[in-house]
Length: 431
Image (cartoon, rainbow, N blue to C red; front, side, top):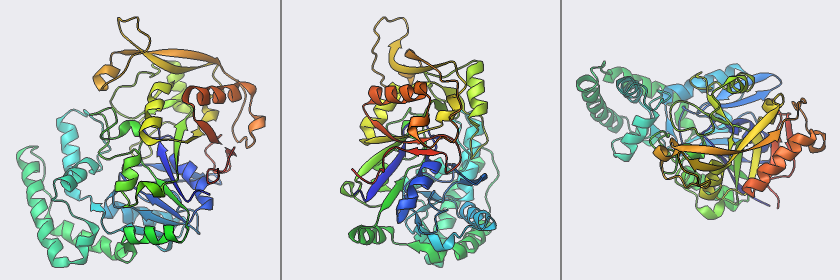
């Protein structure tokens, strides 16, 4: 039996990780979020009620599951407290089932203002969520950032906050000609929010190793997707953290031997938010149809996502980087009405007859032409189907071809937004 399962996005985020983790968390003791911040938007639908999570792990709707925000996450105190309050309004117990690593870096209001000013200055070049995530990671790497643990020492926190805000305000005022952030207001708000969070702040490293020793089952939850990884993604059109398997280890403190299996969440087609190369993008009415039917609008920003065909070349890269052993396929039902479905199986460079072309960076991706295989659509409703044998034969063929192209088995299929809209082909915790 597997004890530690990593669940990662294989594309550009928005694959449906929230729903998949909510479904799988029924069998675990812990769900640990490992990286990113409140730029994530993990959506769960139970009995037609939609819950969107930004920083809180996706097992929070399970009363038996302890949800932990790992040290790799950058945390906005105000945003997290607001998220907790919103869940409590929906009669969801949060504080009893939530813990935070006291090594989490803090996202300050000044990080958010720098993020906004930078996007405006650069003409929305990257298309960030403007939540301050990038600037917070910058300060973490530059060793000037603040962590949750700093709040336990009030005097020390005051000094450190003054130092970093002086730096941020100089930057905002003199480079971006933007408004400065008031130190006293940030100080007071930080301690006010910390009153809620102080009792659930923990030493994550110790808790996880004790739990693993006691044979507890853990899901390690990734945010965003592998193609947005700061090192392995389509740089510079990426997020600011490691969204691949390495982010699980650095974002929790556990070693590789404690992850028994890596599961990739794969959407049945491709999407991307904001700028960046997208070889299989559909720039016609089919793309518009999929965007509307798939409700492809950012959970965090509300922006319409760009839509494209499934890109096997990109997926194979995700498989290799993460050592993915199985897939959870999502949004199969969105393809129901299409007469034809395309899948990109290789790349060809413009003005070149060579069909197999190796991509080096984002500039290369702008110069390639996808080579497609075309499949017949099924034209039947798959929404809510829970048994594999009840799927249309064309849908089953599409699934089998994905497995053939990638050499990875699909063990879970989502057939709709609801928790119950799922086909379990194999229990991922067992061989």
